[in-house]
Length: 163
Picture 1 (cartoon, rainbow, N blue to C red):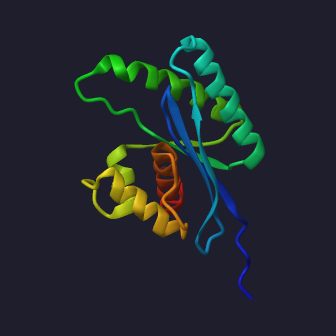
Picture 2: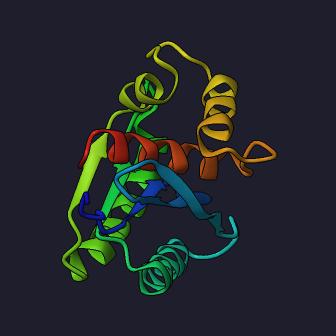
């Protein structure tokens, strides 16, 4: 009789200062199972330090609730506007610190790697990624908000890559 593989809980993160998407999946060795998803939103009129602290507290709470054994985060992407990338980099920093605090391995995935891993094409648009996340996870609707769907995409890639 084959030995049953223990489930692994994977946390996916799409970082941002205004909205950080997160998704939690289970890998039981025989397939991916959806557990939960959501977004951490911060108010634009709040001090940046307070917004970052809220993200830190929420990530800690998600880790405490779901107890992931691994996490995957989308790497920072910026085109020409480096200034807009700074708040996202700061959010990634507090998220990475919260994950490291619990000793959870953190894997970084480029946006193109996530697109490729979820849709089969690194050129896929956001809607294609969201639709494939819905199909792969067997959900009735596309996960909302968009950042949560992206986070689930990161988690799917981590599961499929055995990260």
